[in-house]
Length: 422
Ligand code: DLL
Image (tube, rainbow, N blue to C red; front, top):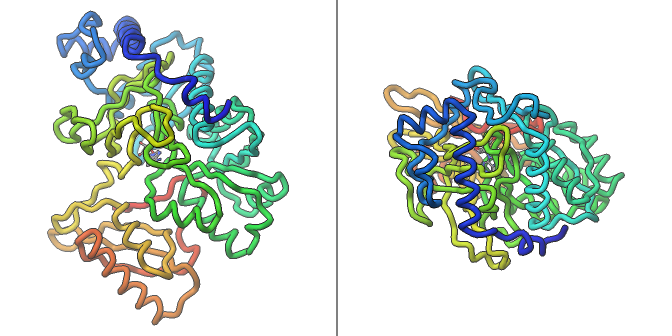
């Protein structure tokens, strides 16, 4: 498979998609009690789905629905047909378990193989999977997708930086996937060790956490690679829902597998193309655990399908953040990504940071911890902190306090970076 396959597997058209949606709704009506009850409460039956637009009348699915039916109460197939589970950890309580049939794993591999091909990976690449293997969908998802594409997969897992670099050098790794925060860490270590010329890296596929354009530029510059944004979530399938092409102007997705709506996060009202809101996804082709109108809590907008790459697939703008991550500091809405942009403007700071929301009387205050790019004196740290306070004020219009940490102070275990501590 190669990038041209983008055209080869282009959408099968609205009629076929409507048929797939109708079949999906009938299946969950017949097999998934909680979905059927929700539809009945909304006064709907499968016969009400006559076009793709009718999807809008169906009830949403939320993380709470998956939790309430823990572990496998939303299965749409016989339990014997399951071949794998994954889970997303969540911050409280039990994990959310997601299940796959053999057919699901195959579809997921096909979807990811296609997305990776569009992103620029080929069967000649050595692809290192620098993500945690296990319940997290990231590593095994990419692993199977890259194998399906025919790349040589190096399943090195997350963390253990020295071993990652050793494998990258000895196996001539050309592409890798990790979280963006870990890619930044790898980039810094490679730069400090002066070993970039000994590596063959050309492409990085990054996701699982929000990151900014500023972070992308740093990773690209330090590693000399093209850095691609990749989006997905366990409840919908895992990584591979949407991914950039080398033009990097929005994340492409396949409308034959995913219907993406943008809704007002407060009211649930569907917003028009171009408006920013909460991403809601219906997965059309899953057997074990279909999700209908899943409220992701992620914020983005739909872009027209006219990417300069010419593939004609619809696009999602890169994720701005999660609704839940929005902080209200002294009455002002602030996203972690705004702080990241501000910190990127202060020369001498790394982009390893953490936001602590602390109580300041009746109001919430923001304390930002950020690592210096290199060891600094107390005086230099003070100057960096002052400049960071100003930059945050300019970008996010709030006054935060900033503590400068020594390089390497914040944890980098290869998993998702903890950006907000409340
Ligand atoms: O993070 C799947 C994945 C793995 C995607 C590797 C990409 C690469 P979960 O652990 O269920 O699944 O977390 C899903 O992570 O709702 C977003 O909030 C966030 N997220 C994932 N990709 C991006 C991205 C995987 N590219 C949650 N940009 C989602 C911003 C992202 N946030």
